[in-house]
Image 1 (tube, helix red, strand yellow):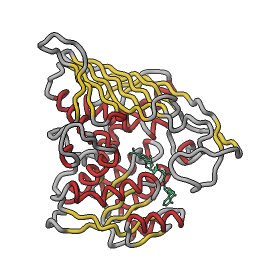
Image 2 (cartoon, rainbow, N blue to C red):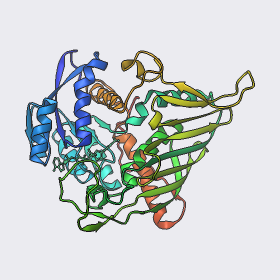
Image 3 (cartoon, rainbow, N blue to C red):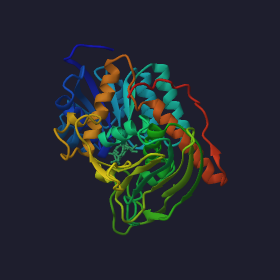
Image 4 (cartoon, helix red, strand yellow):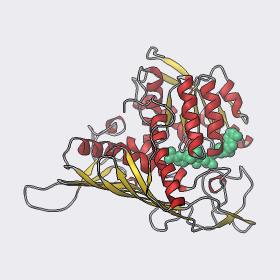
Length: 401
Ligand SMILES: NC(=O)c1ccc[n+]([C@@H]2O[C@H](COP(=O)([O-])OP(=O)(O)OC[C@H]3O[C@@H](n4cnc5c(N)ncnc54)[C@H](O)[C@@H]3O)[C@@H](O)[C@H]2O)c1
């Protein structure tokens, strides 16, 4: 680790769908926004199982090589860090192999299909002593960083209420293809794996650990049209075709208790008509309140008693001084975007590799979120309040923000 300002680091990316492309673009832009980053990414090799996608996308993004076999990325001596953006069913196998080969990993959530797979990856990362960064990027939004500051400084008093949500419509159309996301074999959990890690990570990064949960789940779209593996990426609608069963949940609603004593609710859906990506939170303390919605990334609603006696929330714009805002924009009201959050994430990954400390969010933070997910899953089955179990992995490699 360590290195001079111009040191290069060989990068491999596995999976060139939506996230693999976002990671690649983040590496390409990293130096524009974080010129002091001690490592400069060199895009060595990209892999995708679909040959045409691998070739076309790798060429477009400027990789030196492409392959259809992810093992060639992990075994490549010129690759020192690997972005893992393949479907969930490959996370464990690829991440364990990459860590075992001494590669640092930037791994997409949920880090495996089921909690046991996440814990296995955490053990492999710990044993190999490599750095890890996890795709929980909403915490990097400057407005979210500011919310965290307001909460931790005590400005809002004692925090009593929390409402976290991720209400999406990406699967609301019953004609949406039955991709790996809807199969136990492909994705494992449904919204509990796909979006709950984001909601839980935001909740815990703002208010601290969740200690117990009471959850319920539902699958509202029971069948979808079958499609051949690799036909498309992301979410897409197909006409006609054989119907196959959706094997995991569309919806989870949950009551939560935080260790701090705060009480809250968390709700996730992938079939919620109306909001598109209503991913956010509302926090109420004894002296003030705030709320944030990803669809208005650069705005925070803040309520504090006003000396004029006027009541109501104020819109506070993301601005220089909040998180890494000024890395991207010069003044309040000029918007940052989704990909920018991934540039910050890429920086945290390479800075963790170059420095003495692991930056958050690492395997430690995803393990912590997945412990909550596991308790929610148990509660959906038992119908009871379930405690969030303590650390199972010994993965203590988390660190500074
Ligand atoms: N952080 C976030 O907010 C976020 C957002 C979207 C997806 N994700 C995560 O990123 C991962 C990928 O999701 P996506 O939306 O990019 O999916 P996607 O379907 O768009 O892309 C997956 C890609 O992996 C490729 N692939 C499949 N098998 C492979 C193999 N054996 N070797 C190499 N490539 C293979 C597919 O051909 C496809 O191009 C998932 O784990 C998902 O949970 C995270």
